[in-house]
Image 1 (cartoon, helix red, strand yellow):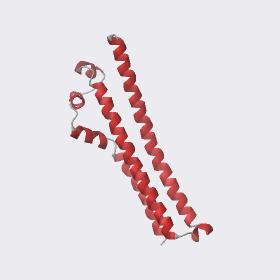
Image 2 (cartoon, rainbow, N blue to C red):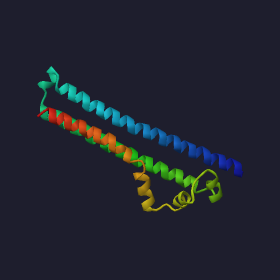
Image 3 (cartoon, helix red, strand yellow):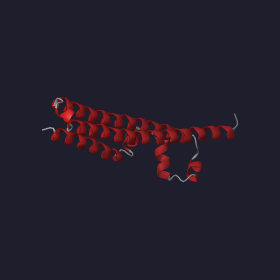
Image 4 (cartoon, helix red, strand yellow):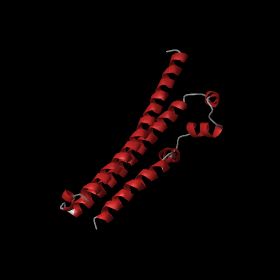
Length: 151
C-alpha cells in the first residue's frame, strides 16, 4: 500500500470514529429524554383513577429503578465515548507533528495526543461529562417529584 492510500485509510477510519462519537452523544440525549418521559408517565399514571389503586411503594420502586437505569446507561455511554476519543487520538498519533499543526492542533494538544497516560484516559472520560449533569439532575428531580407526590 502506498503512502497516499494509507493516509486515506487513516482519514476514513478517523471520520468513522467521529461519526460514532456523534451517534453516541445523540444516544445519551435519547436516554435522558426517554427516562424523563417514562418517569413522567409513571407520575401521570399514579395520579389517574386506575393508578390510585396501584401499590404506591411499587410506583416508587419503578421511579427509582428508572432513574438508576438512566444514570447507569448515561455513564456507560460516556465510557464508550471516552474509548472512541482515545481511539481517535491513537489514529492522530500516526501523523507527524507538522501535519497535526497544519490541521490546527496546538502544541499542547499534540503533546497530549502523543502521550496517553491513565490521567489522560480519565480526562477523556470526564471531557464533556458536565453535560450529563443536567439530564441526570432532571431525571432524579422527576423521581423525587413522583416519590413526593405519592406521600
